[in-house]
Length: 598
Image (cartoon, rainbow, N blue to C red):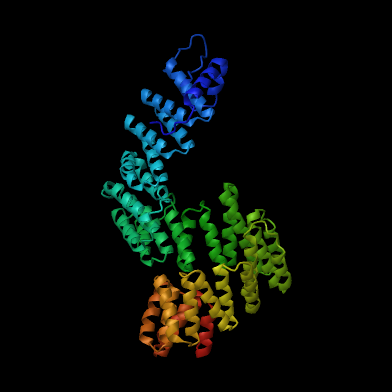
């Protein structure tokens, strides 16, 4: 039975016949996908060979009626006519047209029937299988996709098979049942998992499917399996990098192993090394990130991205001449590239050049760099830097007015202005004013948990403990899985030796929500120390510091060691902390309180 049948079909066919006879035949075919079937090569001379069309008169008329029905808004009749012609001719273009007509009519079942008929008639057609897979996913008939997916992978040319395998997570990304999608894909990739040439890609794909289902330990196991199958492959390493971003520190061994097996070379792809450098930068492991970037810029000086990240790190470490040279190199490469990505990078480069000029107190040069920014999406970033320039010149009221008066071109600009003004005040340690700006922002956006969280942090800075606790609990009420709120409230109580058992419970809740977060582990170690459990505190803080070397964790670990008489090791940890961030408030206050100069 025709699934797209419409009332009045016979009457419509009579109308279509009259239209054809009346001379609209040629016009109806103009622009149709079927024109390719009806056209012969034009003769270039009277001597040219004539290649007759394979279309018979009845078939031509059938296709014409089908297209006229599409034009007249009768997809059911059109679908039946075109699909019948496709079966007679076994022509992939006609099958494709039948699928398109059904999809345009939003009849997924009819489209699936046409795709399956196509696949049965022309078993070697990968296009038919692709359409069948996509239609099944659109209909959420995931369990039926396995055989089709397996066939597509097996039929992909060996040289392109890994690319086909790597595309699977994106194809299945909209499937609601992630566990079911993972099961289907795992079964479809069973042969590839055993193939030396494709095992790494297959394990990586399974790992990404596990990651989508929030199965982080399983995804790590898959990354390790892929790396073991092919140590030089970038696929498992890139999965491992995503796992590192999700707090799976053990995944770093896969990345290190890949870089060892396939180190960056002058002509090789920098994708793993560059991504690794970015992750190290995000983790504030700047010294290690610099090693990666120095190597990349030395081996591949023509690749622009490493220069920009290198310059960012150099600015942060106050290596201004080196940063200027890196930015000049980057800007030259970006201007040669001339694409959108380069344009966005140039904006970041101009902001960094303005920051360098600001550090040198050359405010005119800083403003000149900011004036180069033309992209409307980046104007707010430029305004923030201009406000910082004004504040550093003792014009904080003018700086705040600059941000407040910035026009709101997009709905999110109002929120961004509040955040920018509060951050400016935080940078200058004007905690009370920052608290007031966040309060104003929360009034405007009462359900924004991030704004409420930031206001709570400022309440802690100005020692408004009751307000701080109320705000943190408000965040938890809005977003019960907000582990940072549990951690911040628990740490604030512990640091003041207030309600220590409750503080520990709050922090343990944060640990349960984010077990691999080194800062939360630091809070747990600190509350144990406050409760008199120095041995347990030392164990936890050592693990946290090993996972993430950080000045604040160094301050806590050093104090716990100092209290236990391990003075030499405490001094060593504190010195490391000063190298990481000499201006860290917690570390500086600890050293002043204990009257220590490491």
